[in-house]
Image (cartoon, rainbow, N blue to C red; front, side, top):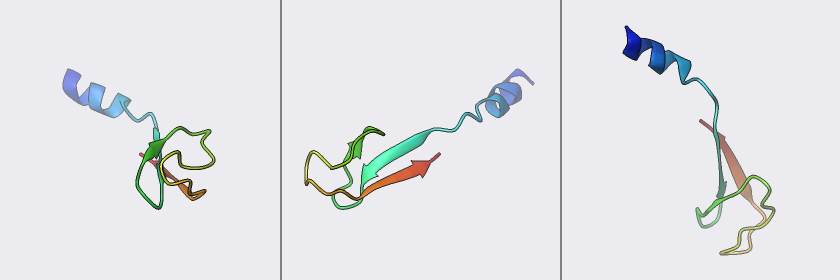
Amino acid sequence: MNVLRQLFQRRRSQSLFECRRCGTNVDAETETCPVCESAEISRYDL
């Protein structure tokens, strides 16, 4: 039972920010990719 309780309590959402052009992971505050200088940053909610 303890394992089930731990699994269900892990419902905190996390976000991943990634450059759409080259796939580099970036911080939430990033406006342009430091690798390819693209301004297309995607946010994925996990």
